[in-house]
Image (cartoon, rainbow, N blue to C red; front, side, top):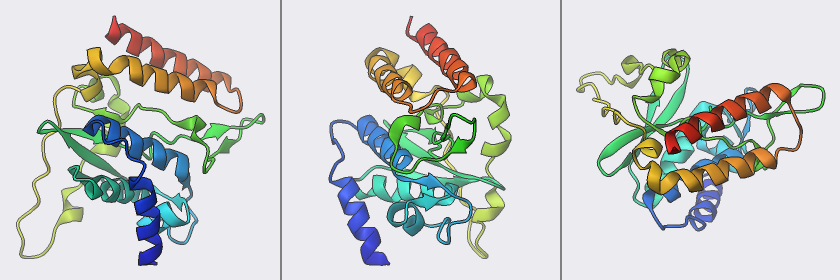
Length: 218
């Protein structure tokens, strides 16, 4: 099992662009969304093995895999748990940002409106929860509950409680919008246009999201 994980990990890491920390984070984010099928019944759904080898996992598989891949090339990533969810903090320029690959893998819908999680299909990549800071929650208050840290899950008897780092006050993509917004917008548009089926509700949500980003750019 370990050797299979090593092979899968090495293959993904070999494709990392290594042009900047941001681009490497984005590469791992996009790769995992494309690779993994969100699956609540898979036997190894809580593990790296389930995510990288069987390609079926839940949030633990996404988060632990992102941490493993990032650390392989020297990036600083940790896993962060709530009572019912797990995501990541990633560091750039000594600031920490939230990355939730599970929530950025929303699946797509077929012509009957049924939700489909398509493993190996990158058409559903979004960046709503990619490299965001505290400012994100002022406009996404519905996400506060699912992203409230449950420190009791990290408690180990007779050890000091782990201190989670503070998130940056400003999301990375907003802080560096002059350098990143065009590339990020192009990536998001590519993902939206390559979607294999049309869903009016999802289309409306994407339009609103793109509108907010355009406001930030302007």
